[in-house]
Length: 611
Image (cartoon, rainbow, N blue to C red):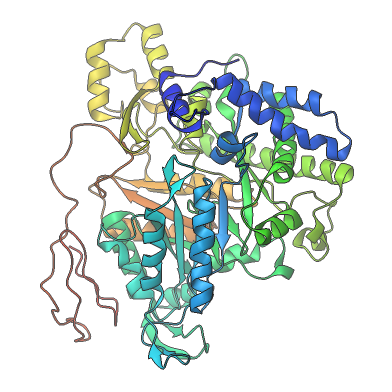
């Protein structure tokens, strides 16, 4: 069994290991992995399989830290709660009972450790008529506040706050209020927010024209906005605080594996899983850094193939082992049997192979790896379909139309951020470059974990240029590029998030997206000095490259940044508050006052005074 790092043990003790009534840990890491393997492999008996043999295979992969499932599976498998899914999407209808049903459902899910995604695009805009009360609607943003407040009161499985994704279509009449909602950093702190961008909007953007805002209740055109102005506002606010992100909703629905069931409206909180209403998904990731072959020349493809096939079997068993919080979720999850297998440790693999993240060779390796993952995962799903039958909604699915062999799972691949399980595995997260060679990670309600990349320490000691003074210098800077004491080839290979230009981040995301069934969670990192125009250009590039969405982050633009290096910077990220209700210089409408450090936005035309 691989040994856990000190940081991993800290996370295990505080989040995953079973505790008694007094809060004392009563489970070892090995016992946790055995509990998970046993509970999941127990489903094999339903299909005439050898549960004991499969349990040993699952346990071996887990204990070598080559494969780890999403957090709820680690927390809850083999325990009374039994809720194993990471991600859910819930519908939000345009009536008070439907809205508060969704609040209740979200509370039930988040209490078990799941994250929730919502589209608020069906809600009528603020000021619209409410026939039943003869009043006027307050609009989607006011109800998102209700969901946010409810999440504040919930502990996920007793170990973490709830995570939400809130999405609104770009053609909703309240879109300007929505995109500017998180300009005030105190608002919607339990939500990631993204704009659902349509093809119609992108066409208007391309020609420099206007597009229609439509009342979702009547589909009547309400007014028109300049697409470029809205696009610029989204980029400006993302420059300011990292949000909103964007998802390309028509592109997502073009790849919907079960279009006969309806359209996708939302994703999970991190954006890697577009899901239908009530769908859930189970995730797992393979640490591909552990599959670099001896001599550091290539991946051990045969061993990786075996792990992919085992992982798809594991995830399909999880669907049956799961205890679902709602009958609607159980029904559609069993009908589509979606799973999301991804990778972590990709940056570590590149380092072991001597390849810089921001290089054509890295893109080539990423494409080969993503293609291999997709082919093997789909092959494994086809094999399970022969053993157990295809997913029940196979008839009428996109896969049936394509004429391939029946599949057990409507989707098989997804690239998740793996923020916590990568700590357990002792590897880099998802397909991200290293955040820094040395950095501080803030987790678990304020706990701070200092991390130094072990491969760098190993290389420095082997080369004879290791020193405590050098390590301190790197901890201050994060990056090793430009440090004279570090050899040039090492500087190049140990690329960090802010060494890598945004265009390379995007190209890597697009490289994986070309082969992934679901989507790719990836942050496009910008230095503090980046401009709004550079952020906007990244959104343009993401669309051109075929990404399903994009999330950007400019260093230091949030006070509660999860990863950091160097000394604290007292300077704010920088906006000058507007005076209350200044007239908009473009349309004359009154601009709402900005909160301290936030942006003011004209909700009529989209003019922004973010400086």
